[in-house]
Amino acid sequence: MSAEAETVNFVRVAACIAAGICMGFGALGPSLGQGFIAGKACESIGKRPDSLKVVFRAMIVGIVAAETSSIYAFVISLMLILLVK
Image (tube, rainbow, N blue to C red; front, side):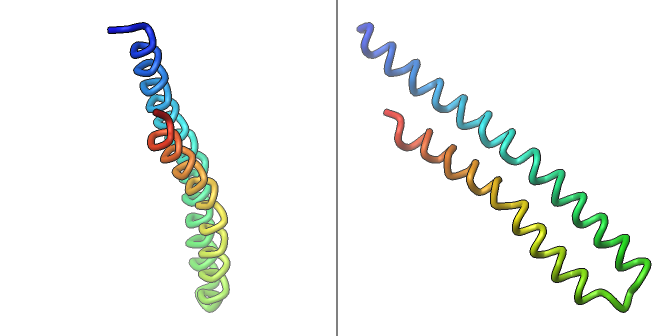
């Protein structure tokens, strides 16, 4: 195996490891945030059941906002896997 082939393999392996780390850390924060949002929404609905529609709508908007960083991490991971040759 030539030195160039070994370098290419090392770069490919490093890109795959970086993609895994990116997805791991990129999903950690949003998942904790979404759990916190849903927990507080359930707590609020438990205290005031008549506010279900308002709280549910706000919860969905908050979860979508928290999910965007996870989607960005997924896109970066795909770019690392598919574009690094």
